[in-house]
Image (cartoon, rainbow, N blue to C red; front, side):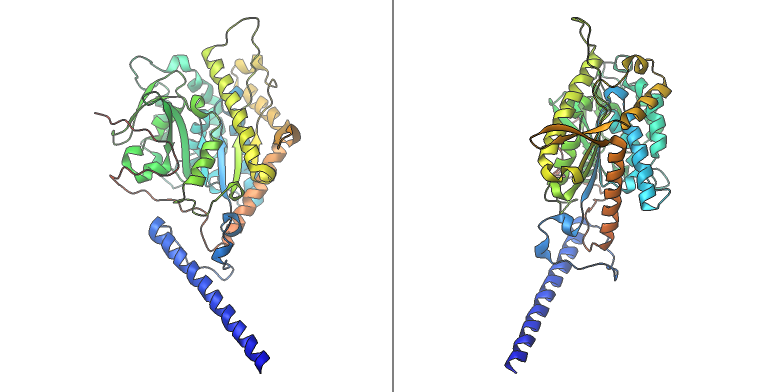
Length: 432
């Protein structure tokens, strides 16, 4: 009897323990709903309950936050990144079995600088039908046909008057009055603010928290592309004014910015505690050919690209080291090797030439940073994209079994509070 009594006692103890865990989970869900306002539905019979004390890493419980980062112009003025996205979207559709899936369906955060910011805006801004304005194929055509024109800094900006860029017409026709609040996921697009002498990040998280941080997407694109600014940029309510130059100067490779945003924004990513809780795809645009004959000085545009790509490479190495042993599964970088680009053909400006070069770059061996060992060539860039498409779809499927949300995207609210998100560097100059 004593033995039986002992078993019953243990059973009661275990039962109470499970009840405590369940109660803790329920209160956590209610707290998240109260604080963050996400929509929660009753768990299905296939969903599993996870003890709260096991939440040392969000990926074990809620999955990994999926981040897409897109570099500035590079050698291909955005075409390599756009082509990579086309292949990635195609792989995601094939692996998920959803033929009309969009790239925005599979990422929680997108960051883009310069032409990469334009790509982020095209692919993650919501149209009238609730779908992204552009498919990956449409975004590639946009960049291939118009990217080089809007990248020609000397012809499109009026420095002295600070008048809007002529290329702004292209963006106004594309985005109309849509603003950061109209984006589908967390969007981050940087520029450099000459007024404060610091980077400025256009962020959906800030826009939904404070009206003074909401900007029209057309103005965001002009600001991040302003290679020979400054371009005066006003928020929708005209309370915030910045003097913007291109994001390629501030952070040509915006991957570190995106990671910092996620790790410090506990409102929207409550269970992301470290790089193990991230799944990051970083897209380059080809390292520019930097050879200069004799003592010839590179043009201003060439210098911007050279500096930008040098910074991009440094950021890539630093991030790869930060991911450590998980870099092969949690962090992927796609880039065209330095010196590969036939600059003579590229400068002819023919769309077919640029598209061909981008495809050739994707067939190159992928160059991967190795912890304390420099770099090594691995699979091709296309194979690397396929590997990460598989991982992204696995992550998407895994979330269907999670009782707690990986992302708690804040919804747009009007607020006069000056509080901004924990995620971005924000500098505000009031407009008189």
